[in-house]
Length: 178
Image (cartoon, rainbow, N blue to C red; front, side):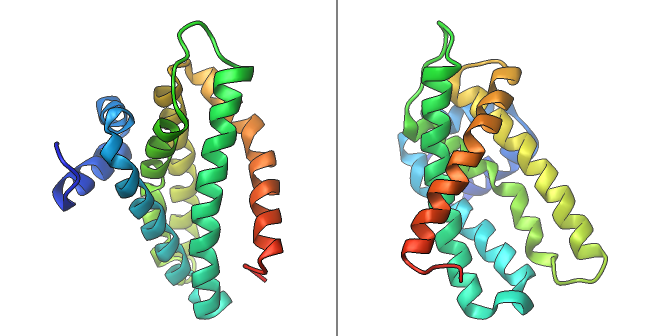
């Protein structure tokens, strides 16, 4: 898996979905993988938007994409701060970009939310995708911050509320998601 072409993107998404630790490490260290990580976040947001098109229409789809990108960036920054300042150990080493890259690819299971509009099956698949995302995000934090799984879970738990508040405030200021 080299480069950032479509083949590398799909291979990395499959590796992350399979919880393949070397794939996370490869993404963490590939400075060219930030844009593909953004693409995964956007694709996941589009999939979620399609899965819930009846709820928000096209405006909801656009707002969801903006919200997803913003939350990804804010959560990455807050998790980076928490992981490198509050829960760091002597072995903790990372950058915000490394955290962003691995968390961006962690959105891969969220692509399954595209079937959210299907009665009964859609919500079940969306719930499975949500749980799967929690696992991929935990591994992403663990690998990008060079910490234990327990510290990665702690980083995620501590980071999510301020991230939602910050991203929600920014979205509210610009009137996105109403």
